[in-house]
Image 1: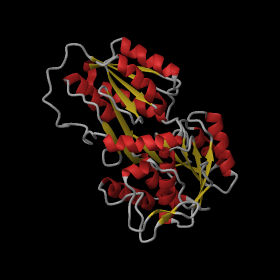
Image 2 (image 1 turned 180 degrees about the vertical axis):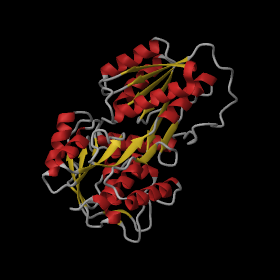
Image 3 (image 1 turned 45 degrees about the horizontal axis):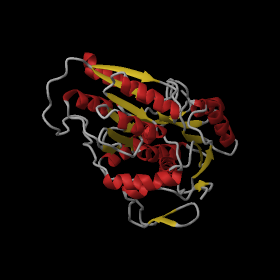
Length: 376
C-alpha cells in the first residue's frame, strides 16, 4: 500500500518506469543463469506487514503469499513475519532487525516501507530486499507491483450489471495514482455497461481503520448508493454492505465470509508465485534486482468468487472480459470511438488511443462519471 505525497510519487514513478528492468512475467524458468547447488541451510525469508493479519484484506494476501512459499519450498525455507508495523522509524527498526538476524531476503509490502528498505539495504549489501509497491531499486533492492486497475475495470462491469440505481460508492484511502487508477477503471467498467452510471467517492486518508471505513460506507449508502467498492485494508465496508442489504466488491481477498449476501465479486491479489520465485532465486544464486508490474496476464490479479446473487450471464461476461485483458485484447484505459474525458470535461484519452504505462503511473485526474474533485 501507498502513503506519500501524490505529486512526488507521480513524477518518481514515471522516472522509475523509464529506467526499470522488468523481470519475466512467468514465475518459473526465468532464463536466469544455471542454478548452483542448493545451500545446506534453508533460506531465511522475512516479511513485514503494515497492519494486523486479519481474515481478509491487503495484509492477508501477503500472508497467503508467505504460506505459499513455505508450501512450495518446504524445508528449504524458513520464514519470519512481523505484523502491524507502522511506516517510518518503526519499519526501519524491524527491517534492520531481520537483516541483522540472518534473513537473506526480506519482503516489505507497503509503499511507506520503501525508504526504510533502501536505507537498511545500504548497510546490508548481501541481503536481498523486495520493495512491494515501491519504485526505487538498488543493487540488492527489487520492486514489484500489480496492475490492480485491471481487476477494478472487471469489477465495474459486474457492479454496473447489478446496480439498480446506477449509483456506486467508493471508499478510498489516499488520492495517489494507484487509487485514482482503480476509481477510474471501476467507473469506466461500470459505464461500459451503463453509460449513465455515476460513482461517489469518500476519502478517509488512512489505509486501515475499520470504524472510519464503515462510517464512510454508511454515508454513501445514504446517498442512493446500492453497490460499493473500496481501497482500504479491512473488511469493514463489506460488513457494512451486508448490514444494510447492499452489494459490494471485495478487494484484496475473497470476503464472502463477511458478506455472504453482499459480495458481488472479489478482486484478489496473488503474491504466492512471485514470492516463491524470488526466494528460489536467492536459494540458487540467480536473484537480481529488477522491477515488475504484473496484472491479469501474469496471474497477479484475479477476479472471481462471485456472490450467490450474481446471475450466470453476468459472471460469464466478467470472466470473458478477464480473458480479453489477459490476452491483451481489452485495455481499461483505451478510448473507443469517442474520447475519454475527466470529471471536469477535459479530454484525457483521445479517441481510439490508449494511455501508456508512464501516463497510467502518473494519473492525477478523475474520469467523467466520478462525483468529486481532486485537490490540486
